[in-house]
Length: 234
Image (cartoon, rainbow, N blue to C red; front, side):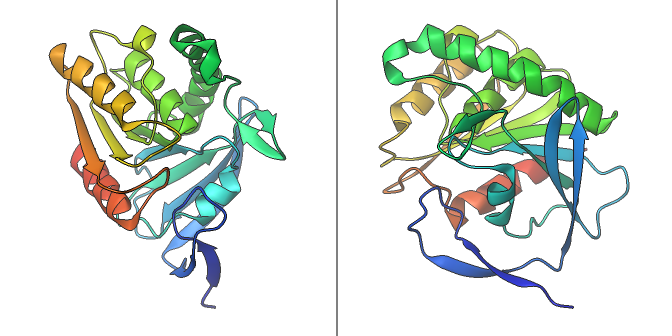
């Protein structure tokens, strides 16, 4: 039976136009590992031991809703969407932080969130290749993972996320950042400064800028994400 559903067009805002997406290319499952719930999407043609791309939703979202805004991914792998542990306005968040708390407080909150989630990701992957990514707050947690687990993670893909200076390291998994120049929630200046600092340290980091794009994920961003993920597969 052909399944079509109305979904958000890869956007954070609930007011964005809705589009039709064909989900027949994928198979959904669910798993709970170390107390973390995952919604898992597997391309039907992907091999049994295909890599895991773990994508973290943003603040004020859920794994299910983030998955539902995710078009069929043109890469043969499994995409796992973990559910953040903390409540936030009827949905979820990875950590509690406000801009007045400062960058060091952000780094500490992100570190705690990353440590809780990483154990579950390792348990889920069971030796498979791991790539991580996320949107907004989820991207910031994925950034911390790239810093802390450079040997276990093949690539990190950060969409509209911050990079706390305190978490920067001399070693990191390859990083690809995607950010709209008109983002009024997380300034592109944060992404520019973070990527520049990593490059200055000799690390592999790339920033793709999207003129006029706000705090969202556009089809062009998704295409670049797919291309960047494919390039890191082994």
